[in-house]
Image (cartoon, rainbow, N blue to C red; front, top):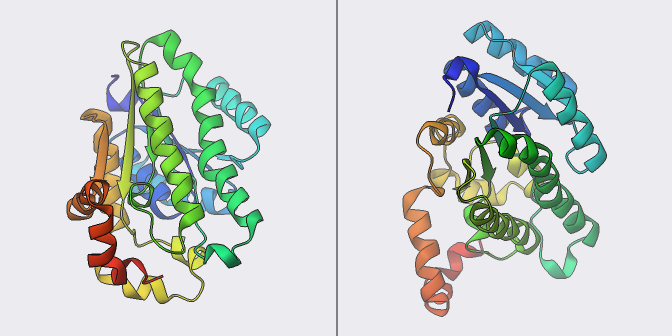
Length: 263
């Protein structure tokens, strides 16, 4: 991998929360963040803050990852303006929690469009160049929800389960090419994610003491670029619970059912 001052790191969903913090951490290390999101105003504001702090001016591109034509057009623009993308962090995503019986099918379709198909499009946009160069790193921000689904998160968990399956398949496809594939599987992170996922605020209050700091998750994610591994699971104890669930699902549902139903 190139030295940090030559690395270009493209981050989707970078207008706030975890995506912004990953762009910030990239710049702190000397890399060039390419910040992508739907809100150009928020991107510009965040990039200005990063430049004041680090002296590095991130590139910003307005992008709705659910528009596959816009994805390929935007990444071609990135290649022409900045050069090849060394690291892609597929971070764009959202969730809506609801009883499936009352869930809007359009909400579920929209989650798949962004969380899954948008991730597919961005990955496909950078792969040819990475393969040609024989290097690159693709990091997918998934979720512990992709390993352990809980009530009211059926649609969201399904999207993150799909991301994990895709990452595992892609990793094996790219073996020997020099391209690395990682997933980051955090539990609840203290961002504005829950303002949309659970408008009542009840779930956020119930898990507040377990919520991860976005800056910490971002730092650990960017560290994967220098120390790549298959998965980064945060917090560790939550991932242990996910693994136990895989072996003893009935037991876990009985023992921890009340915790699962806090949404």
